[in-house]
Image (cartoon, rainbow, N blue to C red; front, side, top):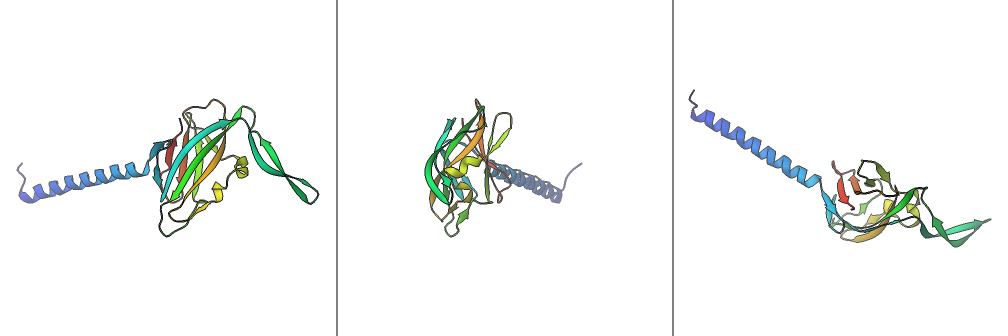
Length: 177
């Protein structure tokens, strides 16, 4: 069977469209599935995100208050996670790359730790004592540095910080080990 010129053009256009679609899908996956390591910049949802360092500890000393009647007195509180757990403290920088829009983290970004067995850990209830990251707003072209506290079982390895935005289909991942 011999093909005429119109059939050659049709086949050429079909192959070109398949190639263009394949390249587009490859680039789309490249952009949305970002994985970086500690001290590497991650560009995600108009933010530049960097995990500066991590520490694990079995207790935290924080400023708090105790109350007697209607009076509150400043005090130092010692916080401890549940037995066989540690606090994982993540020092993170977030820079708003928008030039004209305030970035509000509340109900926009969520943070989780995932271990090698795909178990997930949310931000600790004790995070409120040292950080306001869950309610943070960042003005345009401004960088903020905060801590995030997670409670994780002792001895975990191969941890990842998973960041999910309501504005993105795919999460961003920062490898912590």
